[in-house]
Length: 196
Image (cartoon, rainbow, N blue to C red; front, side):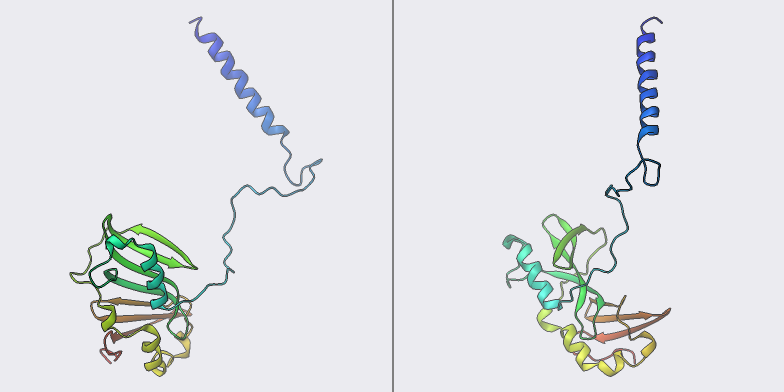
């Protein structure tokens, strides 16, 4: 029991020091503090950062530069199984592009936003065959060809929060604004509306 006494006293002394030190740290607004703000590394993200919009083909070029040559197929491209553009502008460019690829390290989502590329593991299954990019219409051409249909409802013509998904030969355009959501489907090869 005697051996626990020095340890208990040291613990009590350390606790007392911690408590009294907390009472002596000046906080902004306290009497005697100099009201200088201290950056502690926690804050609200700046939502006013200007987004940079790029085309799907430009995003693919950046993806191509990131992936090592050993993972490129015999056609000189990276097999892509799913593509999503988010926060579209009126010409079909996006602030964020996401590509699902099957890398040597497993299935990954490659996310390109504001010039930065992030790689995230993905647990879902992929389609059996990759997208044949040379056989699909570009988002810019899709928007040009279907401009009247895409912009037909002013209530959902605001493109913030919009998404364009490409999988299994179909583009799905989701337009959302003021609580209204509209879905448009297009044949990815021809750009023709599907189901209208």
